[in-house]
Length: 463
Image (tube, rainbow, N blue to C red; front, side, top):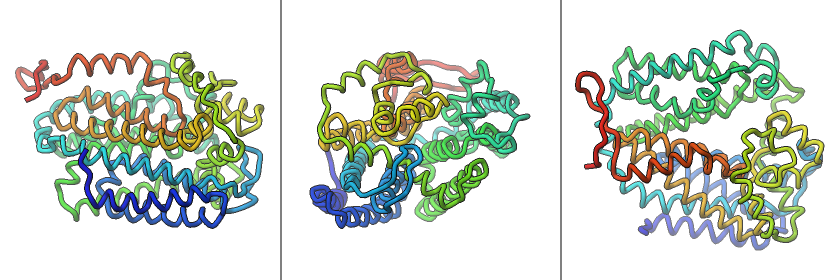
């Protein structure tokens, strides 16, 4: 595997510091040192120095950044009442190991990304304009689907009803067959995005309308952040190489626009959440940020030995048939195990019954089973998987192989859940099994779309 010298040198420098801080994690001073150097590593190296890398892996930068931020608040500010755990924050020394885990995660992604990215024929991206009629047709179909979806909720906006998405879902959301459209909306959004990029003004406007309906629907049903951030990430992935091809100045503009949109989404989240709760802006930010690190912090504090013999529960859970969050009341795997470990049972039962769950338990789960070694192994494995998935999506998009591109985009969305919730059921569901079969059968082949008496499809080998 090829490694750029600058990447290796920089990462080994930071890695050495994080290892030292982890060894002396019980001394609070080393938590401050770890946080300081991680901030430099994260902001100046991962984001500002490698803007194209940051746009490509934005979803996971957010996950790692908020996890470290949340844990830092709990570790370094004593006496914050953690509502979801019914306890107060204090220093236990969990921050350096978490930072070490995320440093290793990003080091692995960089190694794999450098090697995988070089195998993608990005020159093919410009050929996608040949399929603009197909994009326009798909966009029209998706626009109709999104309009039907929005029509189901248009009369009941959550922001006027003063309810969150969980209450809204239980009292107002009756979608029927359109629920599949809502679930797969981020995947469907690929075609409006492609229409915006490659078509003329009229169809481009229709693409913008499709994405606007997507946004309106999720605002209407009480979503605050997730679907909007997902749309940003998907848009940047689809647009990724076009951004790169337009030079450094265009990259900086897109980067600035992305940061601005991201900030606006965060502000909307804060405004909506404070409007339906007793929190003010500061207390909401404090609580919400802390939630990203609370399960890791508590697990690190109370677990004094490994439990590898219990890992069999994770294997059994792969085909347990529990499709909804509320089905997992009393479950003993993934985030559900960690929730019951860290919080009062009645509180967890009520949380799950509402269709909601806590945040960020991937590293905590592996720490419970295998200790520090488990955290590093998980960082390595999930980092490899994410780099492979995102580069595969870009590769097949460049080749015009849309079915494979959508398969890997779906895996990308599942991996976001895997790293935060440690739930892998969907990787073994019927849709995933069919996806694996398709990838195997169609290796080195694709369904080609060309114009001949309309749109014609045929199976061809890659050139």
